[in-house]
Amino acid sequence: MNGSRYSFALIWIVLFLLTGIVHVVEGEELPKAKTIDELADRYDVSTCIDCHEDQFHEWESSAHSLSMVGSGHGRTRATFKTAITRGLMTWPYSGVKKKEDVKIEHLMICARCHLPQLAEATDDVAQEIVQAVWARDNKKLGKLSINCLVCHQRNAIIHKWQFGTPERTEVYGTMEGEHEDEDHPDIKKSPILKESILCGQCHGLGPGFHLEQPTQCATGYGSYLWAYIPEGGTNTCQDCHMSRMEKGHAMPSYRDPDMQEAAVEMQVEVHSHHWRKNKTEGVLPLATVQVELTNRTGHGIPDG
Ligand code: HEC
Ligand code: HEC
Ligand code: HEC
Ligand code: HEC
Ligand code: HEC
View 1 (cartoon, rainbow, N blue to C red):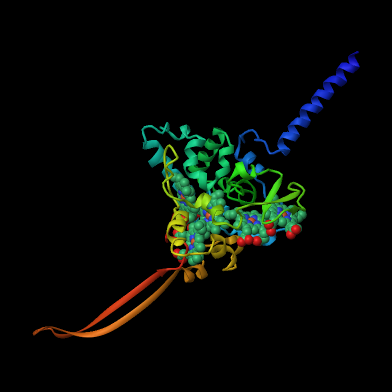
View 2 (view 1 turned 135 degrees about the vertical axis):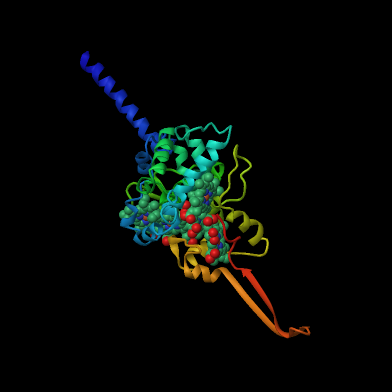
């Protein structure tokens, strides 16, 4: 009697565990991450380097790998602090009087583009980030970034009613097939990987009127859609920033000499004249200089 009750309980436990596994496999929402490390683990890309060495090293050199730290010694990290002290803390209805009040919803005014996966974390993680920002802890903040799994999984599908929600057990690429990585055994096709809209998710359209507190930082995608395309532009972001210039996952911009070179076309025309000014000063040499600058990028510059 005791024995069968015991095995009955065991079956329930096994079933319970199985449903847990099935849920994760089906890509159902995981509980929110409670620490930076837990969130970083969920987006762990340390194994990708084994087989995608070039992409990995290029990505490591890109701004995306430092999206919570920024260029220099931590320009983005420092600006997060400014946004808290000179923004959130001064706005009467933000709910933030001191840094201990900062929650995920507050950080999302920046993280919706700088770290979209932060939406999957608890307010404890918001506080851990705030602590790291105050301590100028680039190493800790650097654990979180726009990495392989943000573009090749989380943000690889936009129209979820049409194509479903990205599954955590897959990587999303340009084709369907098997994948040698045991944690992600299939490659699914992302409908947008080669489209500008992939990048547009974070490269900014404008104010963001759908938000309670619209913020803008980058607006490059807006000017791409409303200036470059209407004037007959045909390249995607990927064409210019990855393939055509052979920059791959480094996706550089103005810090790269080739990109600088490609950015602006300058035409200068100079005509010299002489000008009889007055009796005392006499005839002066004069030049008319006509400078024509043409923006050859796909958007306004500078941006962000
Ligand atoms: C609409 C998306 C979006 C939002 C919202 C956003 N950013 Fe940005 N941010 C970007 C992109 C994309 C870039 C880089 C591209 C550029 O220069 O246009 C950038 C660049 C920056 C840079 C320059 C980075 C460097 O390394 O030089 C800083 C600093 C920055 N953002 C801070 C913030 C802060 C702080 C917030 C919140 C108050 C914020 N951003 C909100 C998308 C965004
Ligand atoms: C900012 C978005 C973004 C990030 C981050 C990113 N990728 Fe990609 N990846 C792309 C895009 C876009 C393409 C398709 C490029 C094309 O075909 O023009 C691509 C293509 C690829 C390909 C196909 C071969 C190639 O190089 O075109 C592989 C493999 C790949 N990525 C792996 C990775 C790995 C591994 C990481 C992390 C180290 C990573 N990607 C990070 C956007 C990204
Ligand atoms: C054990 C080796 C291995 C590991 C580890 C691995 N990959 Fe791959 N991956 C491959 C191979 C091989 C292909 C090419 C498949 C093909 O061409 O049929 C591929 C293809 C891809 C593609 C599709 C590229 C395209 O052209 O559309 C993406 C995206 C990708 N991998 C991302 C990742 C990411 C992200 C990681 C880390 C989480 C990772 N891979 C880890 C071996 C690996
Ligand atoms: C998940 C959001 C996200 C996606 C998707 C994304 N980016 Fe970015 N990108 C950013 C942010 C945020 C930064 C700035 C990081 C920083 O320095 O703080 C950035 C930086 C850059 C920069 C460097 C700007 C500089 O100041 O040097 C370039 C170029 C760029 N992205 C191009 C692309 C292209 C091309 C794609 C699509 C293939 C893409 N990005 C997809 C968010 C994103
Ligand atoms: C026709 C080619 C072309 C296209 C299309 C293009 N870019 Fe650029 N982009 C460039 C060049 C060249 C630069 C370097 C500008 C410079 O030196 O100031 C640049 C600069 C940038 C920068 C840095 C802006 C700054 O502060 O100066 C970002 C971010 C960026 N591009 C993202 C994108 C995104 C996202 C898309 C698609 C929506 C895109 N680009 C489409 C060529 C292009």
